[in-house]
Amino acid sequence: MKNLIQITTVLFLLVQTIGYSQVKNSETISNKQDTKIEIDNTTLKSFVGKYLLAEADFELEIVREDGMMYIISPFSKDILILKNETTLHEPSRGVDLELIKDNIDALKFTQNGYETIIERVKSKTEE
Image 1 (tube, one colour):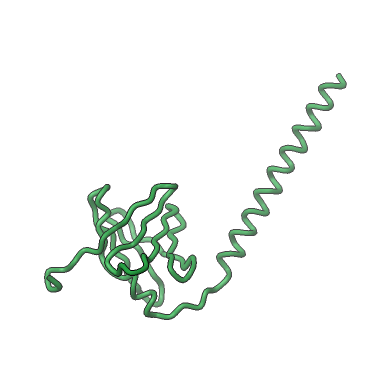
Image 2: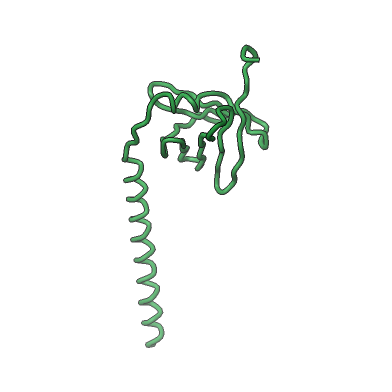
């Protein structure tokens, strides 16, 4: 009986600790999203364009509409949040798009530990 009480107490404390840590993590994430990063428009314009995700064989387009940044794929149109001065984050799929220093025609694409470089697609008029 004594062991049962000890096990029950440990499980109760474990569940309580897990619940508290999840609340703290949620608060931390929401606090991070509330902070505004001052960034100039030229940096945001650097992201705008069409990119080829070669591994999946489809194009992604990054657009700016009404002061917001969006990523458009063949499947959806999702909002992009400014993570820092060189990175945009798409929260629903966990995608990060980062500017590459000294390469204006590519972005570093990161999702769930997977990382690749996506190349800008040149339009017919640019060629």
